[in-house]
Length: 157
Image (cartoon, rainbow, N blue to C red; front, side, top):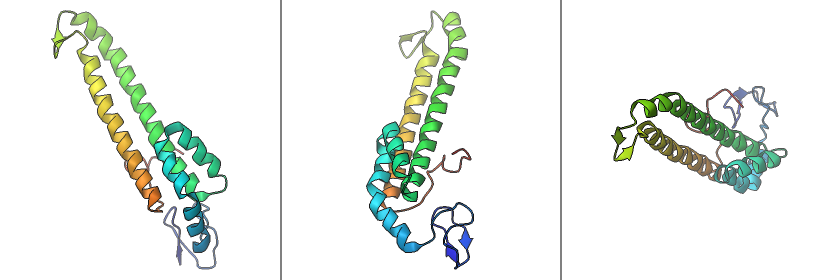
């Protein structure tokens, strides 16, 4: 049985393409693909949107680059969704908070307490998203088809 490096499914020995995800099962071609596209797959994580675009372009010919471009895109989409949620919380909760607490200060800053709390949460989340990108880049450098932690199992993309 041949094990797919992308999805992990066991395939029959005579199969050249994974029945689950369509990835190439020829070990020599897969190793060549990883070797030739390792640098692109690393930069997919480190160059943010530009890296994802480059990864998708390279992914037209490389399953390895396409896999890592998808994982980097999952991280980016999750980051954007999280940012939108933070903005909505600030608007929905923060606006009445400013009206009610116009004379209250938070850490010595006038009446913007909820905004500073959300900014702190968002800043911590940004660090977490960069850690996820670094883990992805390390996996790409090691030649692994490994999903991004926390967001890799999300069903989109």
